[in-house]
Amino acid sequence: MEELEDFWVYLLPKVVELVKPRFDAGFFADSILVCLREANAILKSHVLAINN
Image: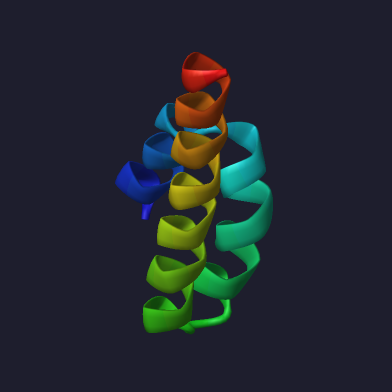
């Protein structure tokens, strides 16, 4: 379990806030979907900022 604790330090705080409770509760597929949605939102905001 220690290697899982170390893993969270590599993620953005917002991602950890959204994903970790779901992951800890055993909702692994939901954790992945939430993480991908947040990554999409972050990338979208960066792309929009660059193009404006």
